[in-house]
Length: 311
Image (cartoon, rainbow, N blue to C red; front, side, top):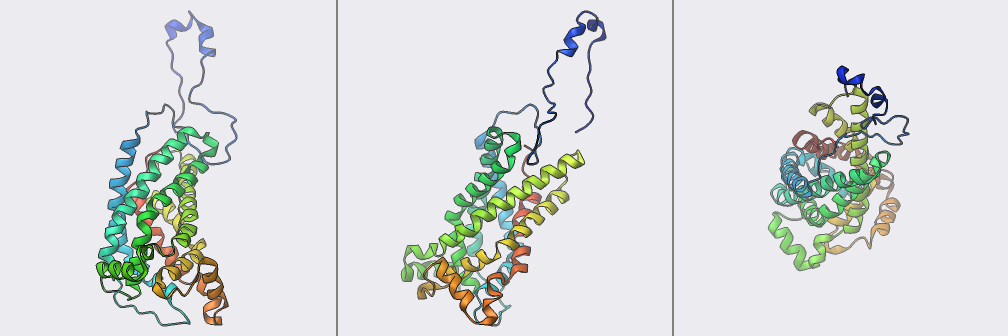
């Protein structure tokens, strides 16, 4: 924000000198205590929900496909590390296994997430006080995660089983999963997925938005694309590293197939921790580096291909 300037007509100043001192400063906010980073938008434009939804769907879907393709090998290695049991060896062949089927789900899932997140964030920022902007970002991120989970979970189940060489193609995977496990097989590990993704989406976007607003206020200028991308990548990597144990549990439940090795989330945790020493101490944090690197993809796609408007 540049320096403030006050302009007035000198010819009329002598006629009503007291009017100058009774002017209400509309855009200045002095002395207010801010618990979270916030930026005053001045005169607000009317909120167009459908425009925000349309922009989010188009940009989010496009960005999701581009970045998912670029970083898919990292995700495959991460999945195989997490699914390995008893110190099994990792196969580095076929790192793009299941990409085509995954893209078919990533496109609508990414579009649905951003399409739900952006208009919800804009609406909540206009509803909540400025010092509660972080709550708006948390709530919008969680809601976006819930909406996208309806498509993300079946996509993840098929993708991870193909990454672990259980199936050769996405259509075969869907057909065999439904025939052997029923339709609910496509939503295997749904509870663990929400347990990981709801806090992940909420926390990472809250950290990202707050860091971005704080940096913008300190720099007193608009952030450029590389700065937005670095801030977003840091937020995604930090949150991904923290939530790696939840991601391991999700992967184990999604890849177990009809054998039903685990009876649920708690049984999965107990089995992993109580297994042999090689697996027990490191398995819940296995692939932490890959996950931290891989989770940067969402923020790279958000900040390079879809930058949220300044609100």
